[in-house]
Amino acid sequence: MSVVTIDGPSGSGKGTIAQLLADELGWHLLDSGALYRVLAYAALEKNISIDDESDALIDLAEHLPVSFSTIDGVTHAMLDGESVEQHIRTETAGNAASKVAAMAGVRQALLGRQHDFAEPPGLIADGRDMGTKVFPNAAAKIFLTASVEDRAQRRYNQLKQKGFDANFRALSQEIAERDARDANRAASPLRPADDAYLLDSSGLTIEQVLQLAKAYLAEKAVI
Ligand code: DC
Image (tube, rainbow, N blue to C red; front, side, top):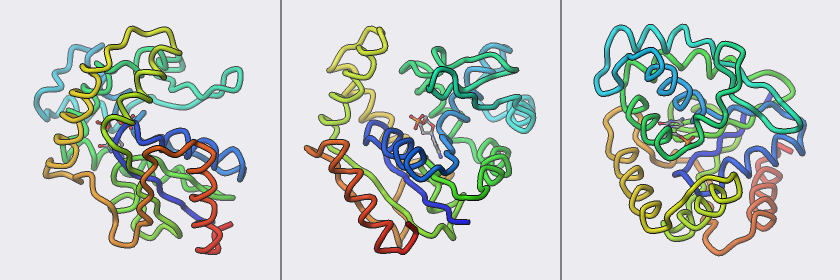
């Protein structure tokens, strides 16, 4: 049973690449960012503050009734059996997720749940600390990056496509701010694992990135 980790900043395309690889290989997929997004959403729904690490927040993380379901070919994050996909994909939800993700207690509380995704025939784990903290012994580790402009453009297109309002300049700024917060936090900061393959997707198509990723997995004898 192999685990492949794909880490990187938001908008680098890792969610898309992780999904495509999982589909193509018939492996399980862990979208770890969705766990932080659902947690932040659930906390706000229950009037639990996400500004400070509290017992209530840790307790919620430990018992979060989150699951994933495929509806019409699209993966939905579910909370208490109800899809919260539309709620958790907004920029506001992403920023709230970034806050709870900065808390060491929250990360610890969600660790076991992430390990549970490692089931045969294999797992593609998408996140920020998959290769460094959650699956340090993964068979292959990819760190996917892209310039802030490329990432803001992709996010802009994604949001528009989903029917959300989007502002390119505001998105660029938010991405840069979120990067700084994710990279500078004390608990599991965003950084490539020492043994990760650094893949810069700036200016590349999804297909080109996918081919590079697969070439690396083949070289590691994972596929
Ligand atoms: O990948 P994403 O945009 O859905 O992640 C949402 C937030 O969660 C992001 O600010 C970083 C954080 N995150 C994290 O700290 N560790 C992970 N493994 C995944 C996401």
